[in-house]
Image 1 (tube, rainbow, N blue to C red):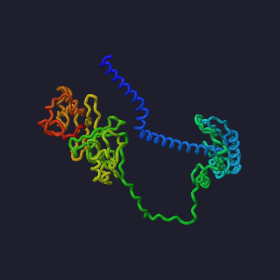
Image 2 (image 1 turned 90 degrees about the vertical axis):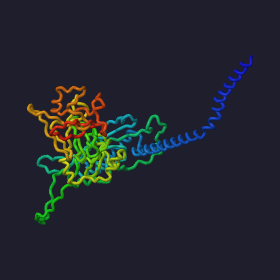
Image 3 (image 1 turned 30 degrees about the horizontal axis):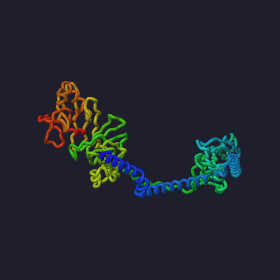
Image 4 (image 1 turned 135 degrees about the vertical axis):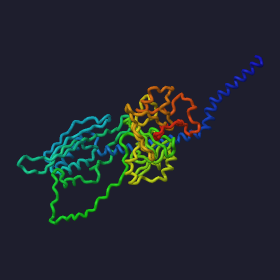
Length: 474
């Protein structure tokens, strides 16, 4: 064997020895000593979890033993006889007439091993006795329930005097609990270790239902007769009832905030809302106008601030009105939260003035008119300080008119692709909106000096220009 082979053999033998030592010595003796603290923490966590499970198990066991002790037996026949005699004793105690106690066939209760047995009970007596019997039945100690109790007055034959008798019918359902709650459990109830059966078990509250008999609910109402004293004379000096305070009434429907325009911040900001139940129902609301029964106070790029008679709310962008947030808890809108601190709720005069501050109704867009909303023909802007728009004439003799483009929109003479033949007149008469920034338009058409990238209106202005409408939703 040459020197090279010996070196390689020694190297491979050393590697094999190191690998075997890592797999045996380190894994068996070194690693447990290094990770002993982690193993202790894991065992403590397992111990606390086991202690919690054991506490829950003991609580469930004691609770189940209480239920079995209330039944008093583990035999079906014994429970049936005992409950039958208890019902008869209560009926004789309250002198129920025409008593009938009919046992029902027992059956399995759901998917458990418990057995359900029942009785149909009927009888008649005066209301006070019937209510007393019903209350005593509710206080029987067994695990049971009273189903469908009915009280009905008995009408005597013609010519006989009424005896004020009430007929009672009800069903009683009782459970016989098994000795082992579940088949998978090793626990079994020992009847000798059970507490004694209680005499009663109260399931109702403090009010006494027997007092209902004094009100005579099955007889006609008889007003109290006067005691002989003259009623006071009304002299007409009755104090008028103060009017109810005015409150804000929200809109009906499922409205949500669609878009917020901040091109003319802050006074010219506007909010576009839409009724999700009716896709064609849209409104554009400016600062100071009526918004969901309140008044729009401010707007930001993420929400709108609205004042009401009692509180101030923030309406998030893209959310329905039902998801509004109180301004004090609107941590996600710090700018609107800061503005709301110095704003007071609406006064009664401001609430009365909301009827004349309605927002602008915006017509729905057709599939070929772009993605932005457009005002409906003949609609008028209700922004404060802006004159109403004149109605657009659609007659055959209507003079041609030109409209001044709104900020952020194209004029009616500019169309995508450079062709507008046959579309100018239809666009001016139908009120369809054009896209705010069409795709493929050269960048030279935008005014670089404008802050928001809106187009500069054409230099040529009509002699009687129309006032600019609200900015398009961006």
